[in-house]
Image (cartoon, rainbow, N blue to C red):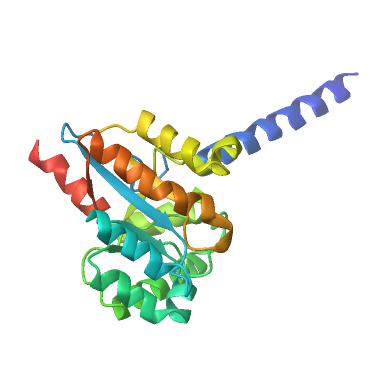
Length: 239
């Protein structure tokens, strides 16, 4: 009986450990090493609009045109392999005045991987971002928002910032299929310093593309001004 109780206790502790590691890897607010930012504390009515993945051959120009219509700068966290495949679209983003961020090369979950893999994923993407013409600081966003030991440690050694988000309407299934509901949720929950995450580069994200102008119009009507993530970070020093 005692052996069975000890075994159950061991299994329970192991499961609790796994749960804790999963929560740590997925946390938007905390990581073991380096600086993580999900939202910026600022009194100014500033919002950062960010997009993950891409660029894509089909939708990059459409998104750039829409943002230009509203005079909105954005931050695109691009993957290295997509930048390599669609180099013209990467240059288009930079020429339009948008910020390019690093979203890894292959978009693999970097959990419990070697330092060599992390370095390759980050540095190869940095190279593609520079080839697209982006010259400023390169911020990093983990694929799927997952990070645990090696990735945060590597970024901290390079004094790189990990950029997360506080608004992600696509994560709610009831919102993701409804552009109006998606936009309403963002507009209702946005705060000064919020970082919005959307995916707009692929065919399956039509609802997000349709929600985008609604989000922009709604937040501009409330007096918010859109800035890049780097500009949002700079606002911390102006208070």
